[in-house]
Length: 240
Ligand code: C5P
Image (cartoon, rainbow, N blue to C red):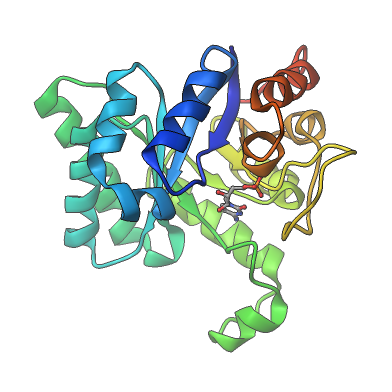
């Protein structure tokens, strides 16, 4: 199994998601369930995956007042997810409440504490979009600021585009997860991703986990595609 390789189950139905999960089990390190599948199919599917022994990254990017986010993180912890995320722009108090809820709820249930990570600046944002919401700092500075804020609040890592891995490693050190989407090999269609690296390049740059969607799930043979990416990761030291 390639522990850092996480597959985005960006499909609409439980049947499609389960078929993919079954085909990829043993090769990939976990499955990302995002707002598309969760909104359509709900928490029962997450519980089913967890019950199968799969590691689930629940990618719902919570951003609300601290009490509400704490409640959502507690609920995710009860589902047994391995990783969950919030928006760092929700601020220090919200992130501290999120982490505390994960720790408290896991202690009550006697289960492992899920990793709580933060989205810094969405990769769909460019300088112009950022200015539109009142932030005039360069994108890289804003990413660095929010990653440091997440770390100071006790979070376990961040989601980052391939091009931000280095600056976050420099700012946050080695003991901090960097979960990186936008992974594309030489022959892959880029789709709507513009800033991409290959799996091997992203790990070598310091990513701890890779989120791969279409290069695997839209392949004619998803298992073979995952095996190729896993082979490209083999032998590359992973941090942290
Ligand atoms: O299909 P692809 O490999 O582009 O899928 C990448 C996954 O990572 C998708 O689920 C996408 O929503 C997610 N993601 C991303 N960029 C971010 C955060 C999440 O592509 N900044």
